[in-house]
Amino acid sequence: MKWLKIITINFLICIILFFILDFIVYTRFYNNKQDIPWSQKLLYYTQIFDNTKLEDKYIYSSLFRPTINPFSDKKPIAIFGCSYAYGSGLDNNQTFSYLLGKITGRPVYNRALGGMGLQFAYYQLSNKKFYKIVPKPEYIIYVYIQSHIPRMHTGGSFYYNRLISYKIKKQSDGNNYLVRDYPNELLSRSYLAFYLRTRIIKKIKYHPDAKTLELLQTYFMNIRKQAEKNWGKDIKFVILLYEDEENLITISKVLENLEKKGFIIINANDVSGTNLKTIDYQISESDSHPNEKAWKKLTPLLVKKLGL
Image (cartoon, rainbow, N blue to C red):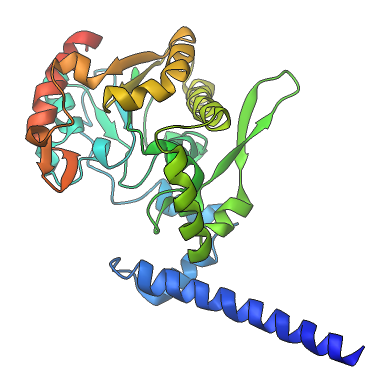
């Protein structure tokens, strides 16, 4: 029927226009604080299935902190995480990685970036080009904060890890492994999807359900599996918990399971003997990232505890 065809065509046109508007709102207004040229944003949106181009950003990025003691013959340390591990708001010589290298004399590779999380650590360790940059470490230290849980579902900053999302795929032997979740990555370009999911994410941020906890454990297991596959099984994997105790209670079962599987679980507050999530150890009252005082308090005690 002619009228049905007209309605269908108009409906499809409206859908297309809606998604164009959705794209413009998200890239033009929501992300207007990011100094990224439109040409680069458009290029970014074409790269969802292009891993070759992604490697240049994710593996060879110039945004990483400089390697500490790169020519030392001591056994290296590799750090992963988000802006906490990266050292947001700090100069290079105030960061966790710098202080760790200064105290131990070891090469320290800080592979954390702001807005990142478990996806980014797994992406790097599952990419062969990564191993041409970072030599085999004796220790891998992942700095964990509770916001890494919702980031497993949405990604983090617009420019980088919105392109990276994984989901669980069960093996025939019952074990879990990770595969790229392209539909979720595509949805992460939609402002509407972002808005709706951030409302949902609030519910799981501090009270994750069983499926979310399973994904959290799968990430850590697969991150270590990739490291062992390429470097061998003699690497020590440390999860440094930089979070309030009340938030850690929600993942206590996962931590217990990981510890049984050989992960070294360390609570930053326990090691330092103080609550590092207070204003005295923050960049400012409005910025909760660790300041230099926090890392100076924690790092030497952590070195002592691990025997570095």
